[in-house]
Image (cartoon, rainbow, N blue to C red; front, side):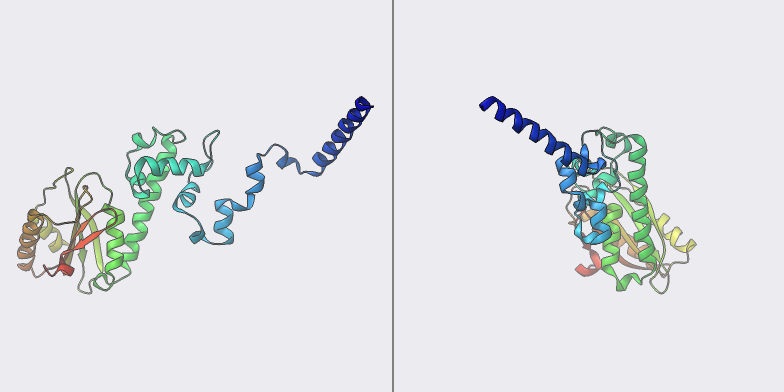
Length: 255
């Protein structure tokens, strides 16, 4: 009797399983349990339904990395990139060859990441052009942190302003090494004259992460200020930039 009862139970189980399978949509039959359970938790759906503020940086980043590599997800790839390069800006600043060392990043995808970074810089630059920069120091700081904050070498940039303190041009004036950059005030003066600029904001980054100005930084600032005064252009500020911090000479009372 025991053998007959077990056979009946097995038969009944197969019948129930077949009935259940027929009721499940085909697209879910081979989906892993986490996919079915978390379908409504996908980043792109939450962005549409709730808004971008509901997503972490990694989740937002993953939207540019679809599809993920075989056996992994785009979010996993986003976490790997952030772990490797430290920050979003660190990823965007990484050379294409370094990006391609990670599984799931081919040259085309690495180029796409660089394109996204340039679009972000362009968007921030547009925002600065729409504002009177002296009335929007946070806008300037955000732009400079994104543009310079995680560079692996020192870069000196100039923001030339008109008489209303609106941006005429932002450009890289010099590029150096990890610890120094050579800046030529006469070239900056020549550029200011060519643009008919009335004011100038300069900035450079410290790859070390410290925004404390060096003695050479202060000396250069004074030299620039003296040279620009001769052509009636005001040096409005000098920012020292790191990835998450900005030092302002003007706020410190040094200009």
